[in-house]
Length: 333
Image (cartoon, rainbow, N blue to C red; front, side, top):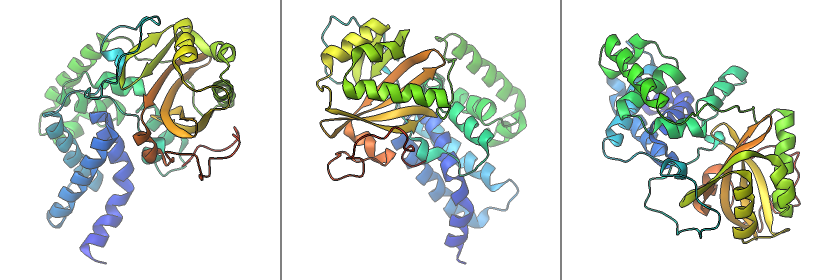
């Protein structure tokens, strides 16, 4: 076995978790994938000198974290529309797409779900990539963000984080305290979410998809919480409250009954749908379901997002160009 083959075999098991780590740091799948490639390139170059004094996983995380910190020194935080101002009035017209805003991206579960049958590992991954959490972490300075993710999400010991960042344990603890203080000053991000494979949640999601495909606003309204939130990056405006959300969809959505298809998928450990209008890719909707109904939908507009979910830009000639079957498994699961 060559050095390259040996390196590839040993590092392959860590690619997904490295991608999840870089995504949490950067809020961008595109940037995270680039930095995972950079991490592996740097690691391959240094592999002959890797002496195993630390575990391979720890060594890779050191390289990846430092690459993320370097990247963040020259970039702006990723945001959702709700991070830029208050909700819009449904009576006002929507503005143009704000393509120059550094928008937060959704991460497809298929790219980061660990290759394991351990339910605890899968649940940890889901909870550690929730959209609201990743959005909140973007408010932290890069080093605080790194410490918080390593300590609170990955559950590394303070001594391990100190070694990775070439600092001291007191400095790590102080940095973590500052990160917690910053997050405490933000709107609450704790959500009463339910697991996407819960049977009651699946039934709720099936009704949601059916209501959209039938363009039944009455049915859809019954599924949303009274204070439901709707966001649509790269559109700046966002809406709060069931009435405003239903008015938005009912009056601004150009498609009608029979012209919409909702393909189930998953992103950020949350249930999601790929929405097609007239057979063409429109948006990836990431949902926050609760026991009482749907609390939030972030509809990421843009056909360019669909490829990372393993979905086509057009339904014509694809395997999904069939009548909807709500019992089908999520693509890529």
